[in-house]
Length: 106
Image 1 (cartoon, rainbow, N blue to C red):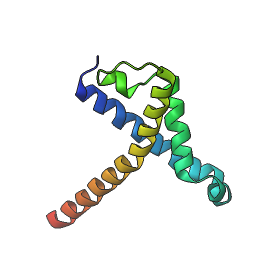
Image 2 (cartoon, rainbow, N blue to C red; image 1 turned 45 degrees about the vertical axis):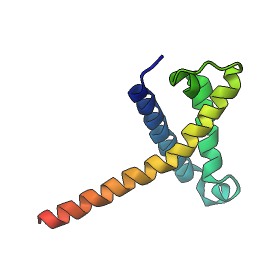
Image 3 (tube, helix red, strand yellow; image 1 turned 30 degrees about the vertical axis):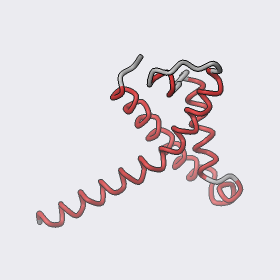
């Protein structure tokens, strides 16, 4: 079993990666495609893909055995995709705070 801090790090790293990829997809496919396939759909697709591809199971990471590992990994992908927006907002707020502190120092 992985300890809790490693579990949090895994979730944060993959959430950042998912948000990065969604932002790149927005740039590549443009407004027309993004109007049809919204950003949260891309995030869910990437989250589930990464959870399945890297065999990430949140429930196993926190110490629970699952009867159906595939379902558990899909749920983990949903958790990763939903946390990507939160991580993105947290990083944006931290950047804004840093800019405020830099202005105050001048």
